[in-house]
Image 1 (cartoon, rainbow, N blue to C red):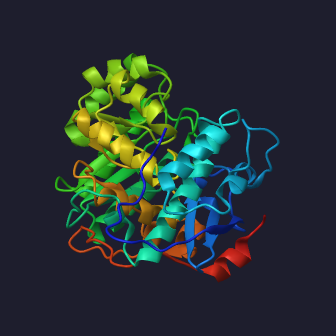
Image 2: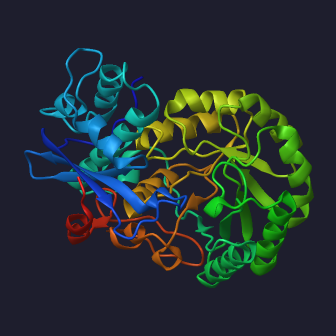
Length: 403
């Protein structure tokens, strides 16, 4: 379970980890009925004896993540993540990841512990980049790309069909005006994560896809996220076969991630690529998704899969299988920046998920962190700042900290 460490030419600074801080943040205007994890987060700071600090975050219940990182251990199969890191060399990311994976295995291996580890691992990459004065993508190896393509995630609003459809159409028009070459539209008015508890027919879902495509025109790439709307391949196919006319690039999470056999049936028939992987942890779950589920697009999330290094391993696995990578990311600028660095060394990464402040509903996503991005002709050039290149507003951290 050894994972990736920074590729460093020449000597590196001699540093030791001295402390781990965690900050649980919650927007004061959060809506518990809103299907979005962007309303809260955990920021993790890894400090060193050389005064260099790295920052990371993950996408999971932040109180749970805090416990995973800071809870004391009482035996060798359930050690404390923090205690295993104190005194360690932050450049040995691969060794530290394996140490934590094995040391927390009775409690973790997958799920929340791995998601929490993602924040720590992300902070280590940020720390190493800052210590070396290099952006993270230069430490990941490989030949960097000169541009990556972001897509805008469209967020719905309202509680009626008309409000939902019109909000997505408006968001599509705004994204196009901002210069995005691609968008992803949520179209979820039924199923386990239906927006606002809606229960609309599948015909209404088709109507929304048609309206968004019309607003975008033919030249903007359209992806659709249905958030586990169907239970089996046949039910899904009966609807989405009619979406071929809308030129949908991929259909995200149409079926529950564990139902890989049904996923494979759908992938063989659907008129668009099938994408999944947003909630998966470690390369092992992605191996099943790729080899049994037969998805054409893998979506590792750096804040869930186990961090930047584990996401890179998943990307390499996808390349071996001839699959496309489109990373998932639904948090603040910290995770968006980490995702971008991964994409710059992943030639088969078609798009990254990106919401600029102009398209965000969630307060934390607008205010917490400012990433080093400039949209130029619908593309993002490589970052130049050390580490992740993201600036955290610590006044926002202090205002919204709840634990």
